[in-house]
Length: 94
Image (cartoon, rainbow, N blue to C red; front, side):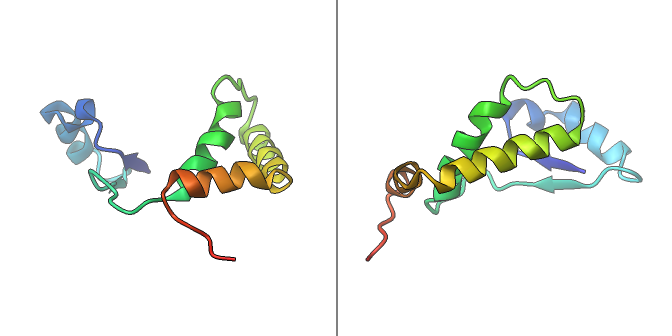
């Protein structure tokens, strides 16, 4: 499975030909070019992804544990989560 993110290098004819030539085993999900709605999840993922950038994981389990640990840490830091909501321009009414 490939999640195609519309990066310019992925839009070349060579890439499209490779995708088309491998449809027997490759499923491509193309993301929209632009998501117009504010999305606080992007801020949360950015915080989680920060710890994954230099992780040399031995297996998928190590990645899963790292993500779960980071998400759990964020549960106890509501100001970080609030900043993700604020950064998206959305407001949470009390």
